[in-house]
Amino acid sequence: MNAPTPNPLLGIGLYTAAESARLTGISGRKIIRWLRGHDIGAKHYDPLWTPQVSIPEEGLYLGFRDLMELRAAAAIIGEGVSPVAVRKAIDEARRLDIGSHPLSSRAFRTDGKAIFLEIANETGDVVLLDLLKRQFAFQEILKQSLRDTEFDADVPVRWWPRRRQAGILVDPTRSFGQPIEADSGIPTAVLAAAAEAEGGAEQAARLWLVPVAAIRRAIEFETRLASRAA
Image (tube, rainbow, N blue to C red; front, side, top):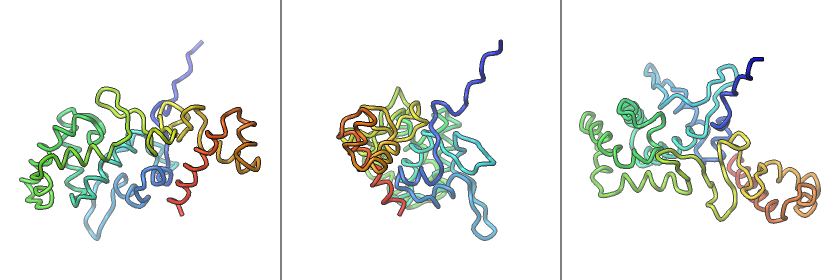
């Protein structure tokens, strides 16, 4: 009897561009542009990197590592660094075996500065040079972009999108990476929907056998996500 074929999507998370935008606060347009590439006039711009997930007939999907890479890339680009320079840095970091998603790795906080400095010197990028000259600025930008993220060795493995105290966790090994209420492990969308369907947090808590506080945490989180999508 043949063993079942492992599902390649297990353990890496699965997010649409819209879900990624709601979770990270980065616009869906930017996410699509950065990960699919785009044209401006006759000029073509390649994607910053290739996403973990490939379902061509279903559109753009991202994995958990892509979410973390987006957060780091957005922080760097937000300082005025061009996406072209960021893509060059990613390519060079991969060549140096820093990883498939180097911006969000711990190693890049130290090695990335030298990579970007080489690119800045080659291109004469004044904004990038200024950023790199500021003491500790580069490392701090990357550190803050990945705040509330747990690492295993060099790699991000879990994310607390509203800080740990809020009790909401994004873990690619659980519920396909959808946000969960940390104590119960139940997706926040499920708990929030239960509260709406049952007429309140207390009723939903009885149905799902969880504390009322867990339902309220899920409702608060899902409300924030909905406001981002509005």
